[in-house]
Image (cartoon, rainbow, N blue to C red):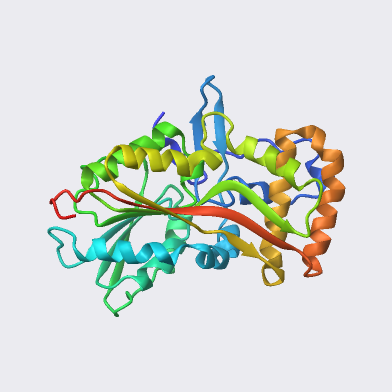
Amino acid sequence: MTMAEISEGGSPGTPRPAGAAVLGLVPSARKSVENVGGPLSTTKTSGNGEAVEVPPYAPQWLELREPADASARSVDLLDPLRIRLANLPGKAGRLVIHDLGCGTGSMGRWLAPRLDGAQHWVLHDRDPDLLHLAVARAPRTAADGSRVTVETERGDLTDLTAERLSGASLVTASALLDVLTRDQVETLAEACVGAGVPVLLALSVVGRVEFGPEDPLDAEIGEAFNLHQRRGDLLGPDAITAACEAFDQRGASVRVNPSAWRLGPAESALAEEWLRGWVEVACEQRPELTPRAEPYLRRRLAQAAAGELKVTVHHSDLLALPRPSGGVS
């Protein structure tokens, strides 16, 4: 299987688990947290030949999570990235940035205004509706007032090769790694390192969630959710480690910084939607949790609505700096 099978909304969602109605989960909840809301729907084949589906993501969910994403992304990775971009060999007057699985374009809205110089963004996604929204909401100016332009590319993401990235200045994505397999991460690393293109991969889940106040069922639900993330050959919380290994083995310099969501009373709507999906996915993995999960979810939703709940969903951001193809380090 190749990353070519990553698509936006191309496959139907997997069946809702028994007990979902009892939990009072909204239809979008599971899609919201399949990889804590990453903008890709993925169909892959597991090691035993079974299809593994990651459902599409609704624009409403991507909009709901965008402020938390923006606050979470690691700004500390931008200085080394800026230095590399300023010293690209053969730089032709503008940066060319490929945004993989762009969704509604939130990565561009966050990053473009933080980089100097003219930029041309190539937005990759399989969902034409999301691409339309991404173009309509794309930033127009860079940090120094330079022009930002965009184009879209709908189709296979993982026919990605060094040749296809010729002329690229940067490859970026949000919430992508954890819905990939190890082979797909290797393909991504091979293409980017082969082209000498820096890579900024934001908001990959690492399998840790913290609550305040704590509940005895937190850990058990979290463990079931993480198992679901690793179904088939998907990397889930192991994706950051796999990506670090893939880029490092190819000679790239790799940096990883934390990028946690920190949800409090001001983010209660996001916390409630995330909770519904998080619990539902855990119950699909372990249906025997359902009788205890129902009162757990009621407690947590009541705490969120009352402004009494804090949730930290841990992610990591990765910056990989391959040796430039032109020989400048």
